[in-house]
Length: 279
Image 1 (tube, rainbow, N blue to C red):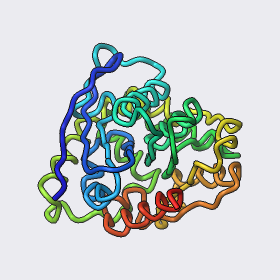
Image 2: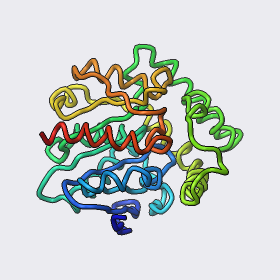
Image 3: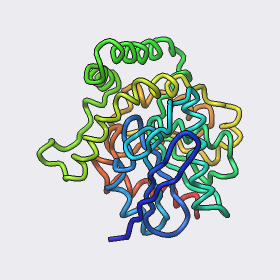
């Protein structure tokens, strides 16, 4: 088993928990929503044979607490956090980046602002619904989730959110079959739900990608979605992104959480996508 190091990094407004495994070019993994670096535990080991894999808890989640009141510009701060990690751990070379969900939005903002620091971005189901022709419907849904959180709390908001995004259909193992560390991740995720719904849901889903900037780096952007998630809301904006940059959507195994439900096949395909750039 490849050794993993656990680290802390102070950034403006937060302290980031990050984990480093393996050696080779840097591959930064950016988690979705209320999850954290533990979401990627099952794919880190195979990827670490070729890459220095860096996974971290996004600011406000789990072991990356806010320092004071959360700021309004969550997306810009999130991409600044990613840049800080790249500059720290790969100062002389750009990094590969895999982001899923809101993590993919972070990656899109990162490569738009700092294209020279990203070697390739795999954007897996970014919920950038402002790209959709009928954006008002998706916008209204996320506003309803936010309002439900304000009125009834995180559990009811989570039910509505999961049902409207297809997360309730993901083929994760039954709770009794989960590894202990994954059960711990679910506990942390549940504890992060309030932060996500209160401070991140609307800023990230209202994010308007810089299409001019993304087209300028089209050769470094890979639109991606779970093969079982194509009909669900989080996978729809990536189809528009695909049309804009002129590259087909890469279909990954499983649903939105395919990296957790089908980690072996997911890691193999991700490595193949990254290797295509290397060769």
